[in-house]
Length: 184
Length: 196
Image (cartoon, rainbow over all chains, first blue to last red; front, side, top):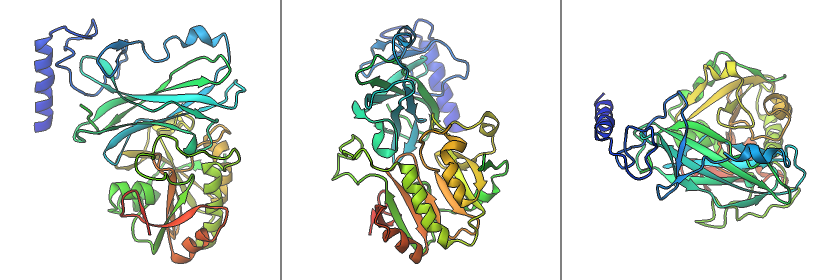
């Protein structure tokens, strides 16, 4: 109960401050600086994505529909962001779908939700050239160390698959989950 | 479908109530077995700093995780009196093995940091794992497999590149002796299951 009260006070003070600076989304009541990690509301609104420096970036995969008609569509595999050994992590992989290439370049990134309505990038994997998924060795992994585990936070794991030698749909679908992990 | 989703998760209570530390539980199963081992799906990284970023160059014919798991389970079949009644856990977080909507509503098996659907079937039904829950494509192995008599437990968490197995000494020795499996003895209380 005490934690909830403190948390509510933090959010309330952030709302009252309402200083619109930096990369604050136009519709947000909380400023970029005052926003804190939290639980994303169930009702979906236009997502705002920020990179590691706080700069606004396009929603991963938002250009996918334009390219889908031009080439093949791989199946992008990913898992829910999850907690393990003090970290939040997520994996990415691929399957051929309608593509025929033997390999693809794959990376994935983790985004943490903040109370200004933004999804802030916290970690990305390296880009790996992978064969279609057969198991553990065919995955990219993004990982970030939790600063605390006492609060449940919404996380997204976006995966990007670029099929080698073929034009593909360049989707970056994501899995979203709530994880007891705060990354400042 | 050969494997059936269990609307009642009571069969997993021995995991939920085991008192085993969370990290150990989701990677090795409950404590209390005579011996433990790791089934390494891919070789261990050569050292610190190589764990996550794909330093392993696998041959094209390297067997899939589920194929290796299936082989291990066939060996473990000799060490249970209930091969016709086994339980399989499917983690809720894989994009390529989504839980059916009615299953997602629960109840699910709830362990620290993880939730799973519970399925029941014969041990040989692992042969239909991909068909039953993965739309026929290669997917990750079950997060847990155990027979009703609790003689052993195989755990395959999303993070490690290996499965943890707890069983009697003879069962672990049978796994170690299989030249087509990369199995090493392990101690589940070590960091990520330190090898013995």
